[in-house]
Image (cartoon, rainbow, N blue to C red; front, top):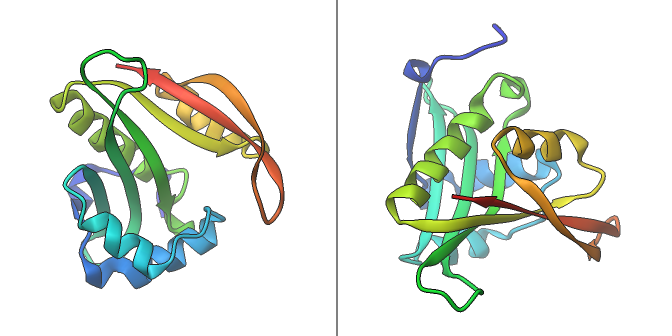
Length: 161
């Protein structure tokens, strides 16, 4: 498999309930914070949720992203967004799939006039931290013992739009 991909080989679409078993497998494989099947179902019902599936021509679910538009916390008008989960199947990592998903989410955020995008990442996940920095995210603060299983600090990152 080549080290770079082209968008033409993939389709991005809204996640459906039929995708949830694939999301659960990818999330577990990526070591993401566990969401239950019901968590994904409930998130899909929200009007402010963004749930993107990246699918190959096979078709095969190879990645996903879950985020949400939220009222900002700075007492100013407008919205922020939170990125909850992004995962890519093992055989497709380091080929631009995560970047395609994140770029689509950021495009949606721009269209919604989002002011800042926020996310949490495990402090040990240096690859993810660098990935987000490559998109302009900066480290904002640390949440001590934010994650469990294993217990670990979380780094809050922010991208000003």
